[in-house]
Image (cartoon, rainbow, N blue to C red; front, side):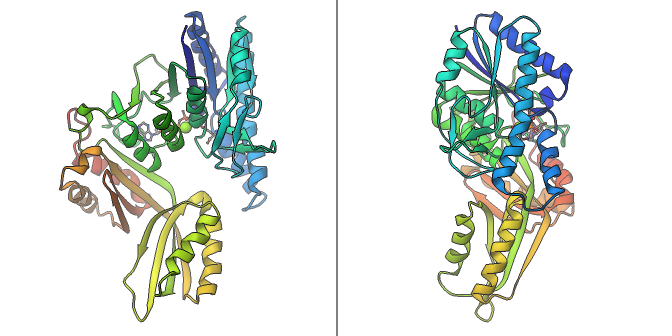
Amino acid sequence: MALVVQKFGGSSIADVERIKNVASKAIREKEQGNQVVIVVSAMGKTTDNLIAMAHKITNDPPPREMDMLMASGEQVSIAMLAIAIHSTGCKAISLTGPQVGIITDEVHRKARIKRINAKRIKSALQEGNIVIVAGFQGCTENNDITTLGRGGSDTTAVALAAALKADVCDIYTDVDGVYTTDPHICPKARKLDKISYDEMLELSSLGAKVLANRSVELAKNWGVVIQVRSSFNDNPGTLVVKEDKSMEDIVVSGVAYNRNEAKISIMGVPDRPGVAAEIFSHIADAHIVVDMIIQNVGQKGKNDISFTVSKDDFRQALKISEDLCKELGADGVKSDDKIAKVSIVGVGMKTHCGVAAKMFHALARQGVNIEMISTSEIKISCLIREDDVDKAVRAIHDELELGESGS
Ligand code: ADP
Ligand code: ASP
Ligand code: MG
């Protein structure tokens, strides 16, 4: 008997018909003699709608209350799915994150899982239930509800698969697997049979929504093999696995984009040791992750320091920067939230040259201006205008011939 964890995203359970479809997939798995744990997200665009509703009241809602609000979406889904499974005569039980003992730290809106007490799930499985767990949520040691960051149901699924030592961790979504880029933007995108944890981690961190980056991080640390596949057909999906020899020959495996970034520039910062440390430690103290950083060549003892953060953290980072600007005696703060980042990822870049030039050529040919660049051993990212994302992604994908198998 295998223990199977299946996760279904918002689009897979967007309406009652789709919930029934998920119920029949779960039942089929159970009838094959397996133990089944299902993790679900909120239905359709529920989470976006809940956030928009709060923002109609204030731009700065308390993070604790946002978690309370957002977690409600997944609670609707688990109950609906349990009702659907019951209606067929099968046994199922729905459980929230706190009920299954998903204990997190206290960082609301992007909490990290500290531990899982899998006892309740195990006994519910033993009693013959299909166990349905609300994704994206947990609770602190003090019983406050937390959420795990957008897309966090993937993280719940992988964490449960690790805690339960599951045999299978299938992430069902609205595409057939992980592609060379978002198939909804680039029709020539090609489905990958497998991808290494490190490449997937880079793609997700750089914006590929198909898996939440923390879920990949957990999968890598715990050796969980993830299969990303479609909830609308039975096609084999993409396996996210340890790097193997065959992957080293692939120079670039994918193009990612992220529209959820904003840029802040602190102008005329006094050019002295310790200033950057001061700025970025204040930002880090607020649990804000900084992405790209550029310091312009100093003039008259002053520098401009620009950096990007997630749009979710933009207002808070801007407020901190404005306070710091006064404290440091800098000239002023500029901000820009109409930017986006396009990136290419591939382990083969470690040993191949000329890839960056190809990416820049592709952007130049489309008249796309590059505002910032950052690189690592296996990725290159360019900051561009938000409106240019679609054409930039297609042009880079074409230039690197990613649509053609074997490239
Ligand atoms: P779910 O609701 O199932 O969690 P998401 O919307 O979070 O689904 O993630 C799936 C989406 O990720 C796809 O519909 C696709 O538009 C997007 N995506 C971005 N990059 C990729 C990629 N490289 N491969 C597949 N899908 C991608
Ligand atoms: N419902 C949450 C979100 O929209 C979690 C998830 O979908 O994985 O971010
Ligand atoms: Mg998702």
